[in-house]
View 1 (spheres, rainbow, N blue to C red):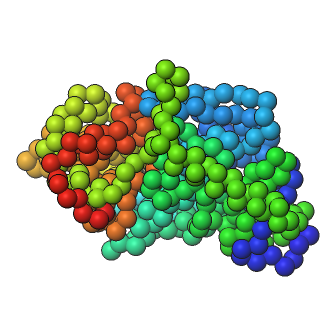
View 2: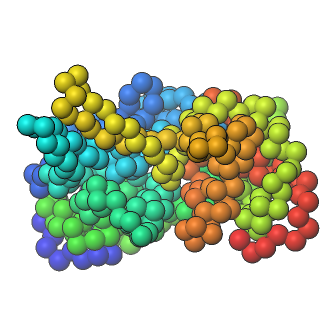
View 3: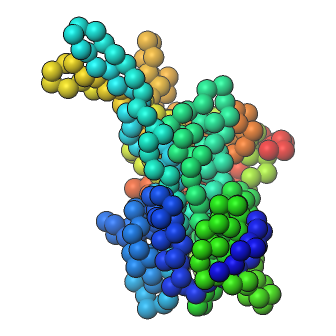
Length: 396
């Protein structure tokens, strides 16, 4: 057992010893979440044992397509992003934010005690997910109003991130400067090699957890091998724009996004004909916003029981693709699908910079994969750029 571990230490464990990490976290009172297969997708759910991790599973993603393939490879984390992200647990799809009870004719109101929730440990988030978490932190913790339930969950969050060894065709984190290498915001960062995990310790909590395992200092050749995983993947992603697959091969096109001047490009082309073309295909189903790890829109409703003596105020995810989302006294602001898609894309890639001083997109590609008709924001943005009326985009 190593007792001299510090932030930045690089250790390694046999793959099977990942169970020790899970067990230690459980003994410390954490609810442990990890990747599992459910409804033919890799999602995050409660993890009792590493035996539940979908070893050998690969995901094949493209616009509007997601398929899993079971292989005989001893690969524990070679699938990439599924429909879930950290948002599902820190900003749940539905939660009670206020409860009102009438007793003896008097109403009493109280907010649920979020402090009672167990601390959460998540195994498996990727670099894009950690950057998405940073975006959500900016929204929920750093504005004029702090969300207490998000704050309570966030402060107790333990993250064992994973460096990707492969990218889906829909991934473009390299374009957004959000991956593929995990760089910050983690307690532990795992890189999978053939028979072991090389683990970088990112926090004192991470050091304490690894100190309870049978880890050993990772030798230089394994550290270099681990670093090469992300370096080679990033290079292959950058090569996509230079060496796209031949159409005849049927291989999906790897995505990338030219972000130069992207804010001004979009904001100076609000009447571009492409918005009409994408509106003809968009179903306004809101799938893209539901799977997006940074979208944060919500609505509230009062839910009363049959006696009328108890009312819960429920907050649930909402989407700018619904007409109700922008409805005010004079009606919906965004009346057409065209205006809703334009609002979503320009907010994500342009005005998010004005509002939060960062992009609202981390390049995870979930919105492309889970769009029923395969609308691809990298393709839409490139089409506008190719026929832009803005002769001189700015620096963003």
